[in-house]
Image (cartoon, rainbow, N blue to C red; front, side):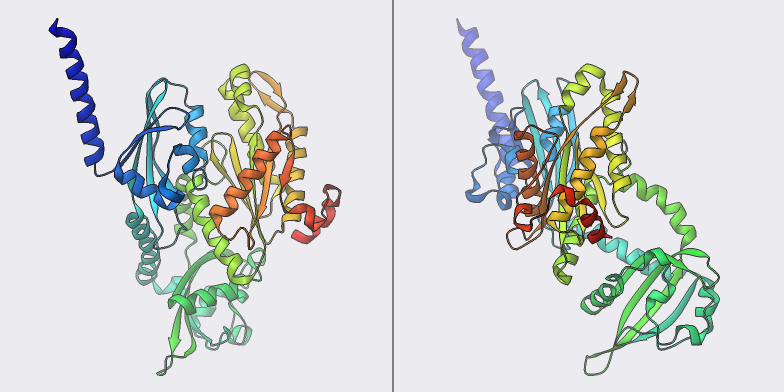
Length: 446
């Protein structure tokens, strides 16, 4: 008669031990079902998630993280094994990606068919240290490079070149008369001359004391090389900016070797587009740039319609081919300054600098049509696919990246509710832009 009581006592002891472990754990722990509904959470997890949830009432972990990590729900939904790691050390940017950003590392383990354990760790300091290390590496590389690899000169307070020495001609081929009084763009390759780059480079230098940027340059003879420009402020005794010192370096060889590593760190392995973590770093910079210069910035969120059905009927390899084709159509459609990224699963995002809501709707519609018309070759035969898209633009009502993503996600939901294979956005009607105005949108974005 005592056996059932013994078993019950053992279960209660194990449950108490689990609770003690969770509450005393140095990391945040959340237990939920596969739909995200929380049944257990330790205090540290609640503390880490507090910036995302008003009033601290967390019922569904995926809903709570939707504004900063909408792909987590898809990652869990696409994980078919009964148990195992869904994701490990997935970075979630809770606040903007600056030096004092709040960044969480998220790991999700599927314990059983309907039980998930999520582990959250604050890695904000680590991410900030990585960013500072990258900046420091640029400076150290400049110090250790031989003199034949770089040119040193100065700019006046307006950003015009006001000094010259033989190192400039040795690197660039331009003599003194060809550079004095000109801007840094004198050394840019033609396809790298963007109107906002130089003023922004100087503005960042004034704010931070120094700034580093890399881009394609071109010598007088027409040889392209990957240049790194380090600009530092020169100040008078009163503290006013008198000019800038500049180091221009040819780091082409280092770029060739570094590109492979960078590609691994920043690119989605399946589709070749930007991965989620790198997207958030780029997007935060673009939002800051748009705010600083008063320019438009739009975002398009999209995913493949009925993607689970494709996987179930044609197989996962066919599903992969569909995702790759969507990414290829997006890359073919966008400008060099635009970004296409895979957030996870079948969900993608387009970041469109200097693009209004109306112009973004035109771009989204073009992509929708391109995907709809595409014949996708797979091992299971030729497939057709469609996508749904949601558009949002930065503005007074949508001032941050998180707001932008949330607005685009709501518009994507509207597109799905409207029957899929369509584009939705909440601002376009007020601009009077129709899909038939595609050439107008193209001109405005060129």
